[in-house]
Length: 188
Image (cartoon, rainbow, N blue to C red; front, top):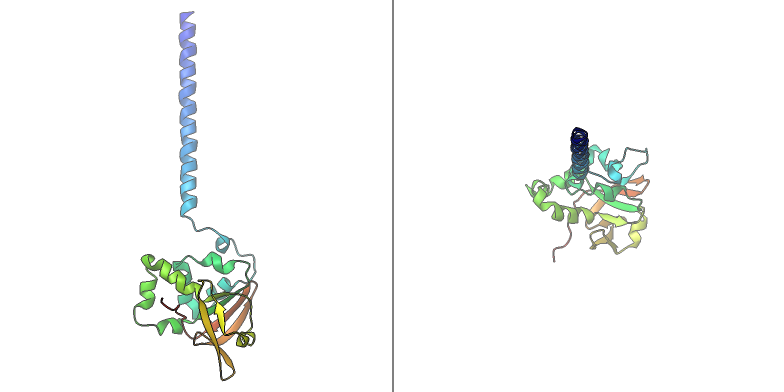
């Protein structure tokens, strides 16, 4: 009888040890999966393309906006530009970024300057979906960084913060106005 009790006790201990090891493996696996998920970039911008054109996809598809796209990625604002909108994006060309003082773009792309870069990029986004001609009716536009950009009409053309609109491209969630200058928010 003692042998049977010892055998039963041993079997119970073995079962308990095996179940603890299995639980530990599941916990470790879950922790690793959770850790991987937190380091992945998530949100609407990273969902597989459904074929709809967004202001972000227009910029990504343009050879003239590679600097803008790099800046949007460095500031991690991709999800903002795929929201339902409507969004009006004033998209500076590569040449507009190149016209900034030497080293400005490189400095802004550094991780420690992410907030300053995001502020500048948000200054290029306005809620709405207004054509170039309709923009002539405004004196200023409220920007996504809570600032305002001045609108003037010069020789019959709207100038946004001193930038000329070179082209306008409609998107499913708004419009992209290609501009020839980087808009810099006023410093307070």
